[in-house]
Image 1 (cartoon, rainbow, N blue to C red):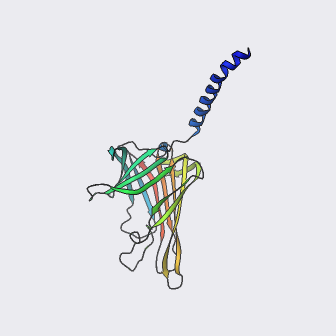
Image 2 (cartoon, one colour):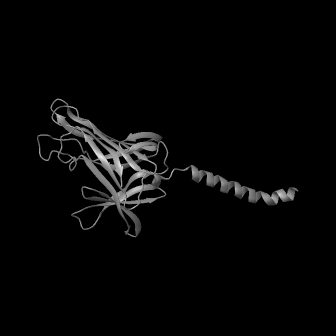
Image 3 (cartoon, rainbow, N blue to C red):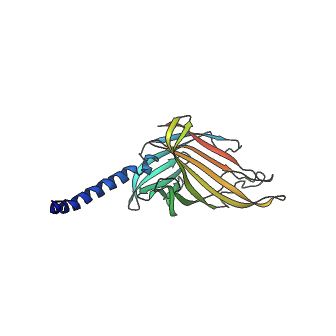
Length: 239
């Protein structure tokens, strides 16, 4: 009997290991469920802001235009209605951007490093960094009035919560991931405040099977010589 048990023990250990690995894989969250890349799909967002800026339109459309072989690897091309294409890949580390292209550019421009949309593991506390610029800070009486070409910052993204409930015009969703990004830039705001650290904060909500349903960006500027503001995208339709 003892010999029989010893003979079966390796098989039992292998079986236990297989079951353990299976249960672990099932418990892991697949980031692709929250950022669908199926070519042909489009997401339309209602844009809300208190800023009076002709460059900000009432709606914006983002789409997965095509799946290609780019630089030897499978890549999905996400396109914005304003004529910008983003080259997206995914692997065991997460979902990330590797290049971008404007309509007036013949070839995509490679990013200096991966720009993650999601970084694995998908769990509260996972962080990553990416370059950002101020989108809403303005010199109202100067030209150019925006700072996106002159100031850059490293934004730290963090998965703040899972299973979040989010309601937008397109519907109410319960299985959503909340990602928050924080950064700051130092700028001369006015003679009274001098140089100030201006916070750049984004909050993104990705829902299972749908993708990005809500995006908020806030850039608060002290003083009177410069302005900031808040911008929100809320999903209104998926095509």
